Length: 322
Ligand SMILES: Nc1ncnc2c1ncn2[C@@H]1O[C@H](COP(=O)(O)OP(=O)(O)OP(=O)(O)O)[C@@H](O)[C@H]1O
Ligand SMILES: [Mg+2]
Image 1 (cartoon, protein in one colour):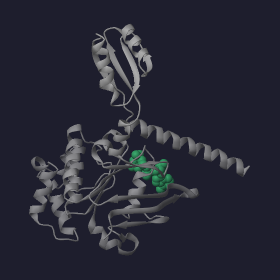
Image 2 (tube, rainbow, N blue to C red):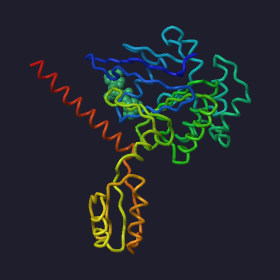
Image 3 (spheres, rainbow, N blue to C red):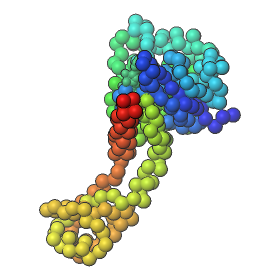
């Protein structure tokens, strides 16, 4: 058995003019993992997902699901995948329940009515499941979409921007049930352009920009690297002059000092030491704020570096062409 639920290798999509809107993308989703596919608008997330689920053809590369090649066993493998790509389509004049029933009848595997009730509860749609879908809000349709995608107990769930139209409560609930599914062994690939969301939802993120994968990060390791690096920490103190004097006596690097706030570059372990130093010197500390480099910063840094390189690449190509 393959250790990966999904393995995407050198996946490429070309459009008119030989432009590569997905360019040589390689990444994997481990079994039971929630993998984020993160990138700004137009990065190529939907195109990548459409190729994975076979909605559009690919120009190059392979897609393996649970170790099996989509090109060879596509029809069979499809029962192992549940997906929402863009806005899921429903029969508007039918209730949510009838939509699910209809979908269950068409599924390749038998689906019991109990299973429908189970997923309806999981996505918290019980109160409205007998209402017609045309009365549903966008968020309710998203929930119904997730219910439909997981109805046949897929081992791999692929969700393209599932939080679109969800309120904060809905986003939180989605996160919670993805984690429940993950604990039961379901692997998930979930796309988003919102990093803060990915940070809470995923085990790892694959970052995409202009069709290329520019980084794959373990979210926990990003947090740990922060622990071991110097980060700006601000102390709001009662006596800034005395605080500056104290700081001069020690080796901590002062980044800036304003009327009441003094900022140092510190390791995590140094924060309580500096605090103790101030308190011992009779300086009151009103607040300590640590401006950790967040994943948001890393994301912006990575995508802007990638954008720069692509721009330079274009210039270089033009040069050779001339
Ligand atoms: N059939 C096509 N022909 C030409 N260009 C296309 C085609 N389909 C998509 N594109 C372009 O490819 C790029 C990637 O599109 P895609 O929809 O995959 O991005 P995305 O990451 O899903 O963006 P978003 O966050 O806005 O959903 C975009 O610049 C888009 O305009
Ligand atoms: Mg998209």
